[in-house]
Image (tube, rainbow, N blue to C red):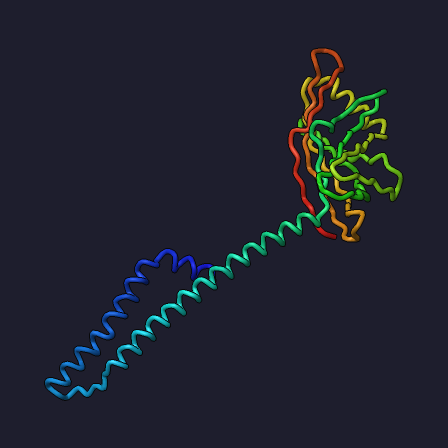
Length: 244
């Protein structure tokens, strides 16, 4: 129906001209036929003043009906669009969503242990339960090195984030060899870049509907001069949310 209304809006001038011509020509033809039949015979006509008035009334009635139908179709289309937008808003409001605070998330080295700190923010209007974390996958872009890092949370624990609040989670490298590899790399390089990804499940505390959210993000590391003072920054994030 939308294409029909668009076509009418685009060609309304031509439609009005054609309708006007038809309204004028039809009674003109009848009138000419009446005059010819009256003068020369051979064309029987029963035209009367009442018939002409009935014809004009019918034309006005049909025209009004057509315009009312067009207006009704347009209003229905507009109402459907509004309903679609309201459904989209309702779906967004009913879907839990967590995003990473790019400023508060970083890579940290403390006591020769490498950790990835993610600050998770809840920007919705309801508390969200975050659980079932996967291991954090770290891809060292320069040397094409990949490792997975577990999250420091008890098994089956649930992290509840209140509305418009945030919480930090820590992924720590427990393997000594991998840990030392990353630390040596950070000590040698003044600039490094990591691609990371993690998946977790989440739901509103008031709902049983569970979603899986995958987060891909990049972290850059800049070492100041020759010291081990490292500035870490999340440079991009990419989210994929699916209902379980």
